[in-house]
Length: 388
Image (cartoon, rainbow, N blue to C red; front, side, top):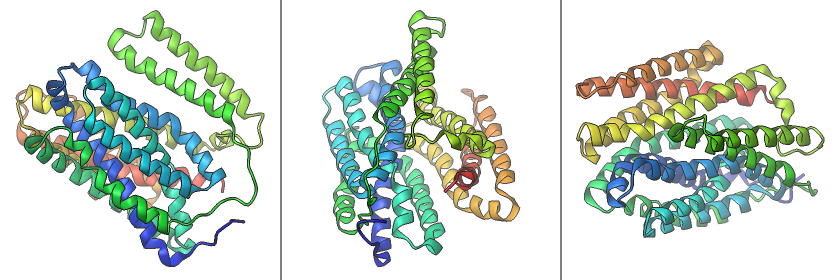
C-alpha cells in the first residue's frame, strides 16, 4: 500500500527530471576526467593530489548508495531524490568557487552525497512512474540519456577548457539542477510505504567503514606500496569490520543488504564482473587524458575527440545490446562484450609515443564498444535473478 496513487499521465515529466539528474552525473564524470591535466597546472598540484578530485567523489558516492537506496524504500523516493538533486547542484556551485585543491576536494564530497541520493533511486522512480507494460521503455529511455551524456561530455569539456576557466566545468551543471528540481517537485510520484520500517543504522555504518577502509587501502597502496604497515592496517580494518557487517546482517529481518541475493550464482558472478569492469573503465578514463595532453601534447579539445570516440562507442552500442541479449541470450552477449573490452584494454596498455591517431581511435573504440555491449545484458542478468 502507498500514501499516493501514481498518475501515469505524468510519466514523461518524471522522465525529464530523471534525465536531468542522470545527465548531470554522466557529463560531470567525463568533463572532470578530461580536466585533470588542466587542474594540475591551474592549481599547482601533482597527480597524486589532483586524482582525489575524482577519488573523493567516487568513494563518497560508492559508500552511500546502499544506505540511500534503503532510505528511499523507507521514507519514499521523491524527498530523497529532490534533496539529493539540490545538494548535488549546490556542490557543483561550491566546486566552481573553490579557492584551492583542498576545498575543491571537500566540495566534491558534498556533490557526491547529492549525486548518491539522486542516482540510487532513479531506477525505482522510473518503475513507479511508468505502468508495468512500459517499464522496459522507461529503462531504455534512461539508457539513452546516459548514452547522450557520455557522448556529449568530452566534447563539451574540451570546448569549456579551451575557451573558459576550469571553474565552468562545474558551473555548466547548474542549469540541470535549476530545471530538474522544480520538475521533480511537481511531477515525481510521492509513493511511500504504509507502515514504518526500521533502518539498519548499525549495518549501514559497518558497511561504510569497511568499504571506505578498503578503498583507501587500495588507493594509497598503489602509491606507497601494499606492504606498508598503514596499508596493511587499513586492509585489516576493512576485513574485520566487513566480517562484523556480515554477522550483523544475518541477524536482522530488515537488513540494509539482503545477503540471500548472493546465493544466486548468476547474480554474484555478474555483480563481480560489473565491479571489475567499471574499475578498469574508470581507471582508463582518468589516465588517458594525461597520456594525451601531457605525453602527446594534444590540446584539451583534441584529447576530447579521442575520449568522445570511446564514449560514443559505449553510448551507441549499449542500447542495441539489450536486443542482442533477447535474441541470443544475455550471458552470451555478456561474454562477447567482456571479450571485446579485454582486447581493447590490452591494446590500450600498448600505447606509446609513436601510436598513430587511428591507433588511438580504434583502441578507444574497442574499450567503449566492449563496455557498451557488456553493460546492458549484465544489468539484465543481475536484476533478473534477484528475487522480487
